[in-house]
Image 1 (tube, one colour):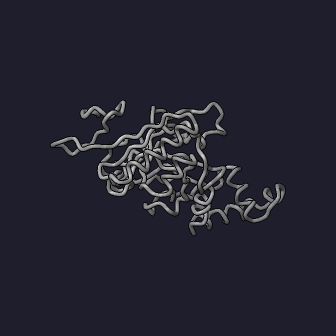
Image 2: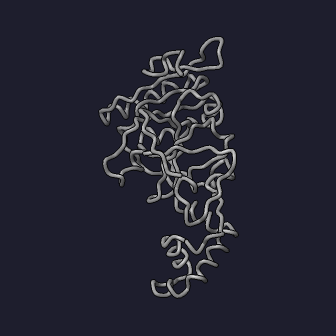
Image 3: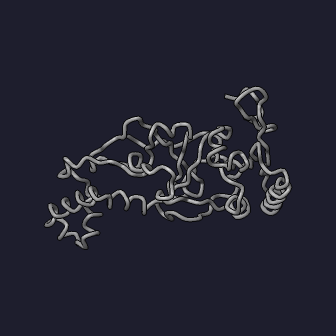
Length: 264
């Protein structure tokens, strides 16, 4: 397994139109969620085999040593005790929980016209989709601010790996096959962890209003976007999704990609 960076032109965030959405536009801040808040109880809950712990990685041993308060020399002398502690931690679920506590995740996706995503994450088509330009930073330390994202993989059978072979993809980027419709990509923040964090303001390309977006609130959101455009010399656009007649499909009039009712 190896993480796969998303390199498409745009990426999208389905949201309710609430204070969080307004702050996202006005303040250029994004919520990075603690995995315990996810709606899938299997998410970020990796499974490990413990048959070959003698080959365990030095980084994992250091983590166990830190938990036991060992220094470098004590780590060498107490390897068996540390391995036993690791095994107990995994079996009790403490190891998996520690992974969750070390990460904040911003969930995005690659397409803005998914009917189920609109229903599940954008208040039954009454919310919005935020469109971001997808730029890859030269400095990896800026990845979170650029919302650099990795593909989630979907599996019918849950992968079980030796603990010493585990990696970011296995621990944080694997979901059950039922979730494949989301076509999710994830920005992983291991520095700032969960919380409300800034992103690069100039990544915000457009706001797409849902088919059932409240007509009385259109002027409000346009006013917010206009104010941001004026203050920061940007050109964030506002679109509104519409139903393609006689189909189970929506399109986005005037959007450079999804204005075509035949989009694929």
